[in-house]
Length: 113
Image (cartoon, rainbow, N blue to C red; front, side, top):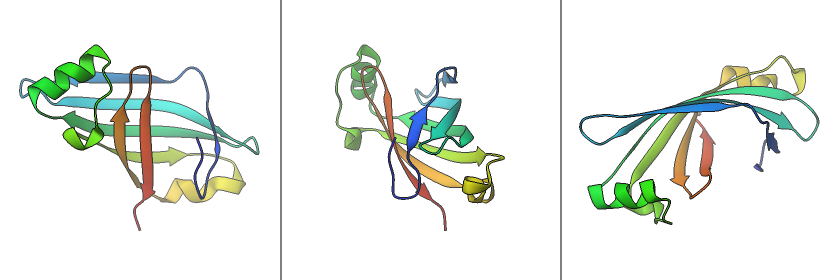
């Protein structure tokens, strides 16, 4: 992962849960740890929603490549760290726009100011 304020990698061992509601929307929760290039560790908590037309959601479920403009995928993110170099993350909220790929999720993350 790489950004203007933070670069690093997602460590193994995270988890995510999806509950597909009766209206077809997926209620998503994720917990994982980022290790920055300088070694700081950050716990990420992410809660979101993904929904779209049934045909688009079926394509996503099959692992097809789907233009993210065809469905809604947003998350609210919070961070926890004890590392002074990135402790500013303890005091912000972030929003992310997501894209589901065959074997991964891509999030474009923005600090709420």
